[in-house]
Image (tube, rainbow over all chains, first blue to last red; front, side, top):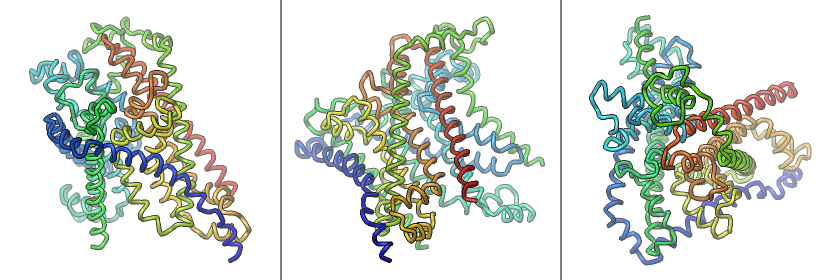
Amino acid sequence: MIINLVSKTNSWFSIIPAIIITVFLLLIPWLFVFIESFSNGISGYINIFSDSQFGNSLLLSIEYTLITVIFQILLGTIAAVLVYDNGINTKMLTVALFAPYAIPTIVTVVSWGFLIEDMGLYAYFMNVVFRIPATMWKNELAFLSLCILSIWQFYPFVFISVLAQLRRINPNLYKIAQIDGANFWEQFKIVIFPSIRSTLFAILIVRIAFMFTKFDVAWLFAGKTVVSGVQVLPIYVYNTNSSIGNRSDGAAAAILSALFLAILIVIVFYFKLLLKKIKV
Amino acid sequence: MRNKNIKSFILIPLVVFNLIPFIWLCIGSFLPNTYSDRGISIPTFDRLTFNNYFELSNNLSFFIYLKNTIIVSFFSSFFVTSASTLSAYGLTRFFKRYISISEIFVIFGYLLSPIILVFPYAVILKYLGLMGSLFGLILANTAFCFPFSFFLMLRYMQNISEKYDQSASMDGATWWQTLIYIILPRALPGVVAVSIFSFILAWNDVALSKILANQDTMTLAAGVKEKILDIEQTQYGLFAAASILVTLIAILVFGFMQFWIDERLKKESSSHI
């Protein structure tokens, strides 16, 4: 017992790195921002919420988040179920399906830029088949292009998470369902869906939080002139904050604090549901 | 059997949809750099060229960005891995009752995107006089990657039995000797996962580098966008070549890490027997 006590002296040294990072790199910066947001009373918040661009960006961000998350989850789940229940070489298939997520964002965005520019493969194809003018994909249809690009890049995350969960299903359960003559839809309803339900829920929350605050894809996609069609909230935040210091009304800090609180609400919601589930 | 065929038929378009952009990019990197040469016209052999890659190797700023990216990714990965391993060990062994509260904190940190975190970082880096320096960028990347890495390490450390700690301290080992000689070899897969995760995040980062770095300390993603994509005449061929190189280097680094770790694991397991 004495040896045990001696060996644990100065054990608090071990958590110093965590405390330093949390306090100096996460807490104090936030405190600064929060205080600055009230530097002119609540006028910073009033200025933000009365800015029509803020409203537009917020709406666009909500649209963007809903569309991309729904299709990511659909596509990712379908791909995972198909790969799980397939006889062909799964390893190569998994790599191919996971590739867009693993490759740097700058590369994925640029490679899509190649495809939808006016002589690009996709733009050309759509022009020939559906008579959509090839120049529209980066102008009037920029938001649609951004959504398709985002779905393509992030559905592999859903795919790999769901596949990992599927591999934990007892294979016998699946075989029994097949022997009993359950068709594909019945197998999905009875065996697959119940086992991935909680994973899907966790993915849903994480994806909503990620897509709502996704900056790099939209920013790299927009290029030097941000098309108004892709000015999602993070880009608005960036534009407001690049002038930090120039604006003394605390608007830049106010928008950050507001976003911070929004994420906080998502987390509280997440934990409430999580706790409920554990009780049930 | 018929059922399986139908499934493969659905998967083939998905795989094609996934890979077309990369194939298109590869072809683009071997085509002349002018705009009129782009597009759907079939790339005949006489038009193929290595010029983009040669031009890139003459492009000095590309190598400065590459060097910056390697330095930032390596050091932030190192800091994140050591800090999260040490702290996760300490928390799971000596401060157990704080585990659940710190889990809430780490999930919160995980869900905050760099664009929300970067402006507070800018405030603190300006205050410390580190704005625009590589070290400042490393610190920001460390803070950004830390929460999730810490979360992963907590899980690994919780799964390592405390019987090891007890027997080590019976033999008179201090806690840090226990950590280095007993726990670390057993937590190696977790350490590797965390180091790769934080390396990838720093390697791909755009927002932190764009806002916290200056012209000389920018990393690849932000620098390439500024120097090649945003100038008057976008140099697609050059960009394609740069993208291919960035991807290849990343793959090589991960491959090398994976190889090194596999070797280490084999050695570890044989030495335990």
